[in-house]
Image 1 (cartoon, rainbow, N blue to C red):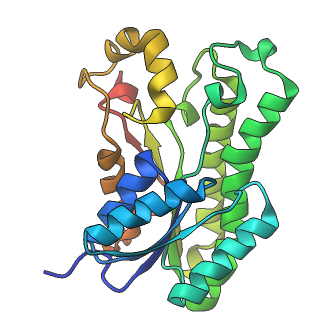
Image 2: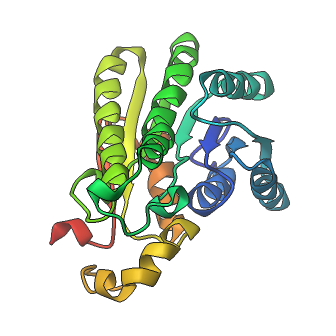
Length: 255
């Protein structure tokens, strides 16, 4: 049976671990050729090794998603390797602990921490779309999935810049979906809840039991559970879906 992405090429940012790595393996299972990009070239290479060991085809890329020239070069490398970009998963992101803001309320964030959070999580997604979309227009279409969060739908104490960045990602997603529908480009977002990744370790250490009591499923999600939604959004099975932001959160947002 043919895979859902047979013959397609895909770019995954933040592919060095967690949700990005899980999605790369799922895409490979479904027949895609994958460019795995990450700020850590070593982590990207490790994901590529896993993909290739599983019988897939992948290349690794470094690059800072906050730097327009580096993002442009990243896109050029994918096109050089595969000829086109059918699917783009703009997944690179950071959490509060990575900018020294763990547990801090809004007025306690430093200027540098706020700017770094917005730079990676929001501007980084915009820059990726800025350089992906012209290529997709030229080739006749494509699919883009951005990583949002349940934090893009609600407020979360001690996460102000993260929440702001993810609200922004969902706004970018909806606007781009409207702007490029006529170009056969579908743009959607996935909104993970609490997922078992390195990024959630700090939060879970501080208040994990309290949070799990608020999740109807009573457990954290697995990276693969996000990856399967991204796969669907990048496949032709979601051909009438654009501008949507899908919760994958164990029922958290239903409360």
